Amino acid sequence: MSSAPTASIASMVKQNEAYATAYAHARELAVTSEICSWHERQYRNSLRPSQHLQARTEIQEETQQAGEMELADEFATEAKFSLAMLREERRQKLRELYQAEARAYYEELAMLGLAPIPLV
Image 1 (cartoon, rainbow, N blue to C red):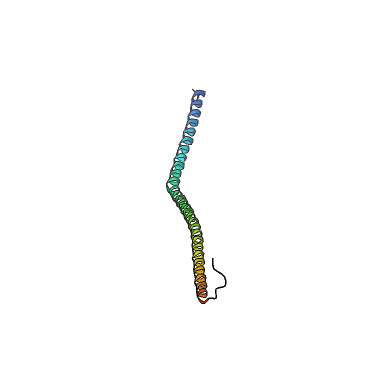
Image 2 (tube, rainbow, N blue to C red):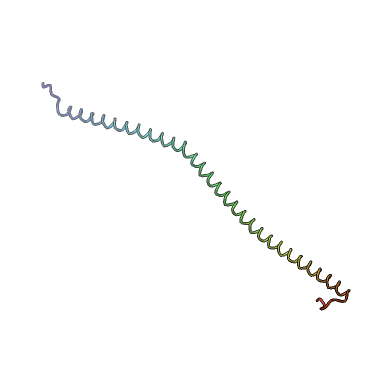
């Protein structure tokens, strides 16, 4: 008998070595996949809520600012309208006051006989 292995034994050893190499590579990929999954979970759990909180806060601030601007616009419009009405009211009162003073002055002149033109 010869000490050299037969072809079938050599091929089986070669095949077992290929399986062992493939198994080691698959195990390495599984470990890498687990590590990646862990890091993704950590990223999702640690960064996302703060980003969502920050985004939510920014949206609330923008909404609040938009609401405040809308209220300021409404207030400005109402203030302009109020001022216009107040101005018109004051003009009317002044007009009535001047007319009353003019009548009183004319009547005073009429009592003295100095009223030149009758007041309408």
